[in-house]
Length: 520
Image (tube, rainbow, N blue to C red; front, side, top):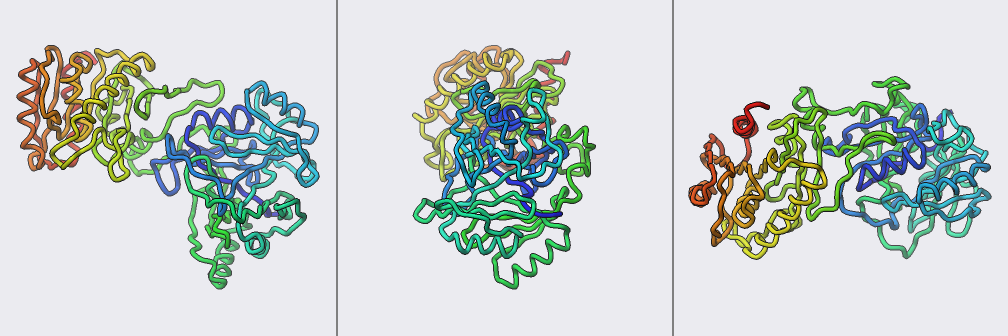
């Protein structure tokens, strides 16, 4: 019987905390890790039972260090997992042991319910029920089969139009009303799981972001059934109904009258399409036809460790940043500073091409202009806020010192690679904090300081990479002169390029670095 919930997809801000909660505390199995279906720079994780069965699945789009959303009307807001009724006490004890706050048990629709919050603040309920059959519960090492999560129990929609929302789900998705409690009506599938529709009239509107539910997916018998539903929805003028082949299932999306996003997805071909049952969730699947394209995709995705595995915990430092550790480190570190209107992911592919075995530490600028990050404020394209530069340089210096201690970085083998706005902050820091940065590759850079302080840069190696047709190139000679006057060792390369980076930048930096460490 094909009926009921397929999966629920949410958005998380911190992948390691998410894995620790869902795979560690809840004991679910990570059954698939892949780049996002819509955005290859976005990690997408699926947790579920031992087989990754539809009806057991919860998935997360990872917006690492992304902006929080707001739970509200027009969105799903709670998820519930089924456990055996006699396991309620064990889960209370487990929550205490894992330092997870829990309330309950309280009765909801005649079932005992524990209420928790995941690290992003999403309400997660554990419901004691014997009314659902489980396909293949996953038994984590510190759980018993009797205590393990069985499958999804329900998901809750907040809507200001509960009649229309309930009617739409009943007409098209195979659920029927089975009861009401207060402002909530329960719609149950033939499989026994549920969508709870809460009357949220007067509640604030939802806003997308981390800590929210992106969509609820329900099951369809086949691709033909999905396409037939698409025809019915179009005849009803239900709004856009895009259909997609998601590799592991075929699906369409639609918004119910209260604006919550719903997906209708097939069971087949399933997650064993490209991994055996034993290997589920171990391989990261990436887009791209070439190995270089896949490497570029992999390096921008946040790294994590499953329970019992080594993990990288980002430290609380003055700048939001991403750390990427190579499989076979060689002791080098690259600090990466992006250009205007980019972010900490922008230079990671370049960094990995420059130094395949280096630790990468990529920063996000803190000065926002028109909603996009920079490392300091501009007054015009060629003049800059001097107080902001000095303040951000001070924070950058504190970041460097903190990162060296936190990530066990050898400062003698650390190089700083910056592009445009990021390169200029590195240049300013060279003069304002001499000796802190010993190797710097500055791409399409200029000296942003109106007054350059006297500094001793003896022993500092600097690579300047200009673009032949870069409009900023006319400012580069002054930076070169100031660096040489401070006794830095300066190498300069002019590429057939403008201000934008090209494929020749990474090998140019790599050749320079290899010359500094000829034995590597």
